[in-house]
Length: 194
Figure 1 (tube, rainbow, N blue to C red):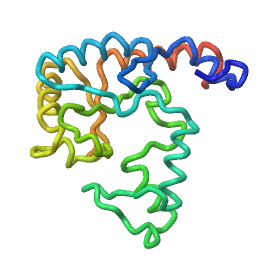
Figure 2: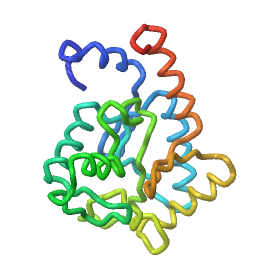
Figure 3: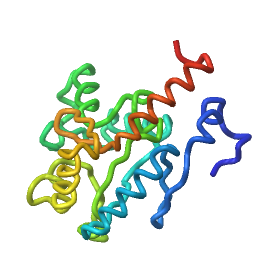
Figure 4: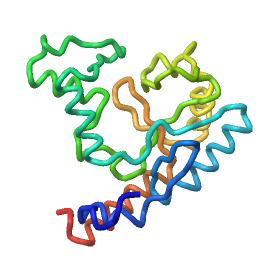
């Protein structure tokens, strides 16, 4: 945890709402996400899955880094089928929309609230594999497909909520959506939002 004296005002506002959840690596999530996430992980474990977070809270600076590395060509920019695009062939406008297919604009990501989580099944992930969060990982035949099919069954029963952006799914418990609404209201009450 950084020294509180080094935090910006908006970061101080968020400080009391985040909790750490540890699996060898720590990921920050909103406090209202913690119990639903723990329950989800317990249920997944009982079904033989090792549900882990690839990401939870993501700072503006981290999102900006992702965005800038994609815009500069340091990270791949993918099409809807998760195939790399040749960004030198894209207009600036098309590049922005291509990046937006898989990455939120810095400041517009629900990860900033700590209410969005990206998950994977560690039990089916080779130790040398880097999670990519692409459809091939979760679609039939993908290494995380069985866990995502289990998650889909829970969604069909109304136990989970998914934000869908083109081909990319981000899993969000109903409590997370409520937490995001409460967060916006708290900021609005402090006069930070119009």
